[in-house]
Length: 144
Image (cartoon, rainbow, N blue to C red; front, side, top):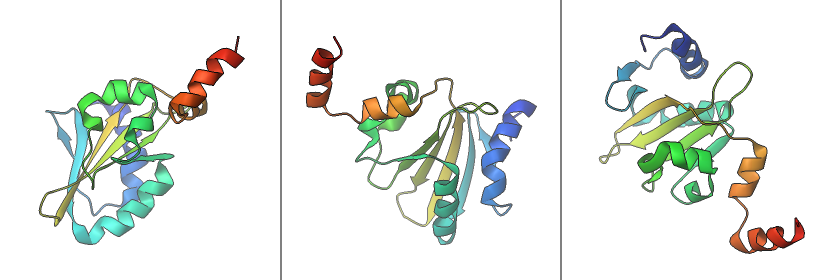
């Protein structure tokens, strides 16, 4: 994993529930924890991820993610049809975390990357990000 014991504790909160059949390594290029696996494991892994993370972003809804997420992840929020980003906000014990679900082009292999976020978000940020432009326009006048 990483060479930082504190980071390893944070990563273990995600990697341990996913099971020991996945082999994790550090991706120096993106500074993320990485694993690769075959398509046969995708259904089980997705079930676990949906239990571990509060938000699931796809190419259809990533634009409605909180500004803090979009700002920190930058180009990584430009998702293809099959890619997903799972996020969860910081808690008392852990910082905010993002997990990237990236199927390879041929469809037989998938990779997961886990990133510890410097930014955080909360329910109010989620609600604000998902509010449409017309509602935001009227909110400006009613909040005065």
